[in-house]
Amino acid sequence: MKDSLRQLVRRPWFGPLVALVAVYALFGILSPDTFLGTANLVTMLRQTVVVGIAAVGMTVVMIHGGIDLSVGSGVALTTVVVASLLRAGLGPVESSMLAVAASGAAGLVMGLLITRLRVTPFIITLGGMSILRGVAKGIAGEQKIDADPKGLDSLMAPGTWALLPAGVWVGLGLALVVGLALVYTRFGKHVFAVGSNEQTARLCGVEVSRVRVLVYGLAAVLTGVAGIMEFSTLTVGDPTDSFGLELEVIAAVVIGGGSLSGGEGSIRGSLIGALLMTVIKTGGTHLGLPNWVQEIATGAIIVAAVAVDRLRKR
Image (cartoon, rainbow, N blue to C red; front, top):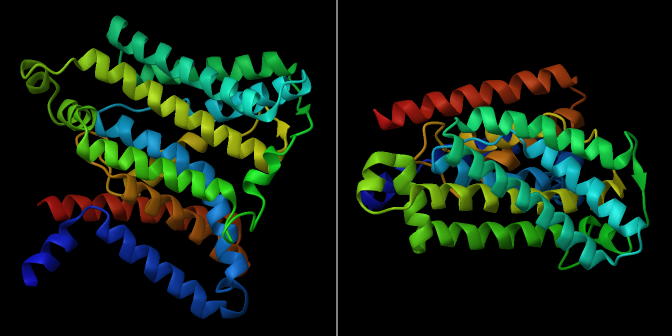
């Protein structure tokens, strides 16, 4: 029993889970009439979907030892592409698939550039962040694109299926699939191997370049899905949307036990980190706290999460 408890405590996501429960309970005590309601819980889950789905992809990227700064621009580009296709007369399914495919193609290109040019992911994805944002503005003519969502808005409508929006279930399903793939497939083991020690992985026969390209392609596909959820919420294609989203996504992964140096992380932890940030924002709003206080609290939790992780390793 003690050994099992000790192993549970050592899990990277255990600390963030305790923090999530503690913060939720604190806001529940301070604002029980509004914060603890079922409607508020559903709202928080809806608000976590975009960051959560993108964090699933970022988790894979960071486990393999990389980083992706183009997430926010990728989400904005997806909203613009899907809105443009809907306005052109395509159906919601075709528009969504093409928009996600466009995002995935951008990720594959960045992965290829990283491997072929041997440039650090930070630089390539920083350039990608600017390029994708520029492409989104070019397609949209530097303005929002209004389009009939043709049912896509129902993805994030509250209570559409089993009390929760369909988008929440989509996010949970993707998280489950990617989480199982990381643990039980050869690709997942190679991702961890490359992140832990790239040279050793290469000597063991792992095709590092192939793994890297697939990782960025997968992450970009998930960014595209997050963009579809963002469009479902906004119902417009906005090239200026999601500025700074990449920082929230990276923060969710780090809070959940992911390491910027690679080799560590979990889908479960990243989702906990994303939900923790949403709870802080929502709880602060219910208490009437200004945004700057909420940002300070979020930043403090990020620093504390990294500090606790270092102490746990020691």
